[in-house]
Image (tube, rainbow, N blue to C red; front, side):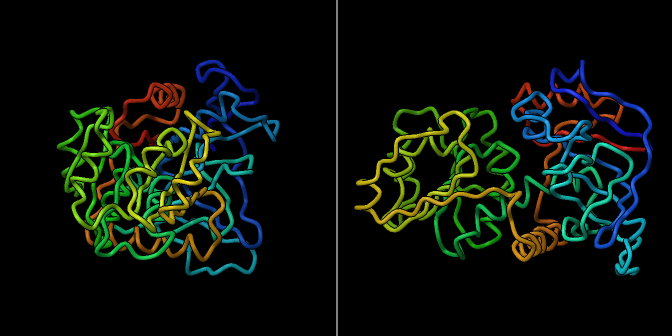
Length: 326
């Protein structure tokens, strides 16, 4: 099969190899997926660059992908063959991810993809959409609540806006690039605020009204923790799904305690099977009802994986970056 891999960390143009290798076989409990698209996430490019030591001599990168189940392992359900699916956790603690024509993965790591959803969009679901669904709903229903979602122009955050609105919440979003405000509003946000405004906390409270903001979702939780505690309503929840800019923030414990605030975290790789199935079902349902717009910024051929990695590293995207596999 055709595949892209690396055998050492370094710049994409120097270490990514596009060539042929043996096709995998599905073992017991696994399915073999013929991939037609592979999503390139920030975690993928960071791993290739060397953010953590390589655990394998050769790595086929990328956790997310989409395609058709072509075979099942011993004892598997033969009725699964032919189903359109998206793959999650393809490269999480595994040597062989989705930047290839085929992947063999545990059955629990694939989820059904509606006929109306392209494989390209499907390859952008695993990490982004399940993170978004978990971020919105991990701590219970948000129906009737007001939710603040930071960085609403990001891939995960924009999906979270849509899922929160469909779940009955009123959404206030922020962005550091107000040129994206209309785009975020199109996703369902009732208000879009300038993240860089020094009066952001007051603006957020004004936009929320009397009921206040009961949930804040943030990809840079540490950097914004102090202001989030100021913004959040009593007994509210601050949910962080990242904190790269300030990974070890000071905890304003007394301010949190006197508002009875909950600080919650998630890591999509560690969802148990039951949780993943539940969130994937929410995503599937919204896709079927055509209520989930999955933004894709750019499409590349498999052999152009290095250029795809470089685009993700550059930032400032409006959506996912996907390799399309012939």
